[in-house]
Length: 520
Image: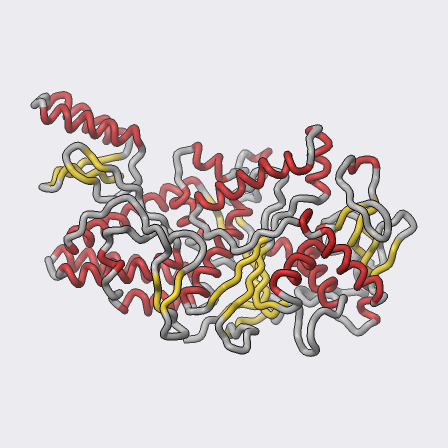
């Protein structure tokens, strides 16, 4: 079944066919963080969506070149550099480091390249010079350079490819220097901003005088320099459709970089807004969460990633703390099933992941290849799925769902139907060790897309935890105390420890292989 995406450019679902004549490689660009503060959970919905898309394209057998920019100079950043009396590099460096820590906590594969706007000033200036030479950009008296929408349209180009703009009702011809502006103003936008006193030391030389780039031109320069004048996929949140992505198209195509008959980008994918507790995120409403806020509340990256992946990317999603509790319960159910499969397969699972990504069979070719990026989180050095072939049912049903414009909610339905079926078979002792290994291999194949990190395993005094849940150190300590009390035949103390664990949301199962912790 072919992979299909909803393309914002065509307003329709289309089969994905890469530009590569050999049909093997895919260029993917995702608008990355603006490092002026800690990224919030709405930002991370977009990045987790992009990670899912990249993983699934790789799952289908294509080789992906994933580029995500880092915006390290723009209006908000300069204001905060000035307010904090620091340097641009010091200010943005702090938040960039935090972003990538959070990014990896959510199990996202690192992009292959993360270009910084400040490292591409030369390329940005060269692109602006092309636009000026072609007559679709002009220098203002103060040394700023603006893109002319009127001249762009006069040259036979379309402004409004990603959304319908009514030029009769809107106000064309106005000039704005702000990076963000309203749909009501089809404005000539700044490509280069002349230096002003408030910019401080944030400026670079150019043919038009000292200044700095506008936000929109940064992405055009970086994406075309790295992926070429035409590439396959451009991703971002739906809030970027206008003006940012529309202006990217105008700049990139207005410069005449593409071959005849080719567009700047073939497929545009946009993720929908995220609400929190049913409302738009706002600090004044108390529903504004960074990833770190949620981690401080006791949730972990896999739970947050799971919740962000439960709704289709084009659906507005209501993120709630109750939903995180549901994610914890769902993952515990999945973890318990996988743990029982490992027991049936006769393997003791350690906590160390493989040193390198596993090899997977590409769906569009016979060769094996790596998933790329980081080591695959779901594999373990002793896991039978590293050598067993996957049981095909789950993998096929999962792929059928994901081929439908990354229908992740349907895909999760297939996963939990598989969990239900697997539990039923194991309850009736109808799963042999080879069958258990094949089912584990099927999960690992699917999890190469989902990227759900396994629960961390903690070796206990009386046995090995089976991975039914991530075990916090304080919980493991209470279990150790309970096991020590049992060994000393202090059953009153052991019962007290069991009751304390129950209050904290954990129960203990005593098995021949040792004590097993499970979330209630």
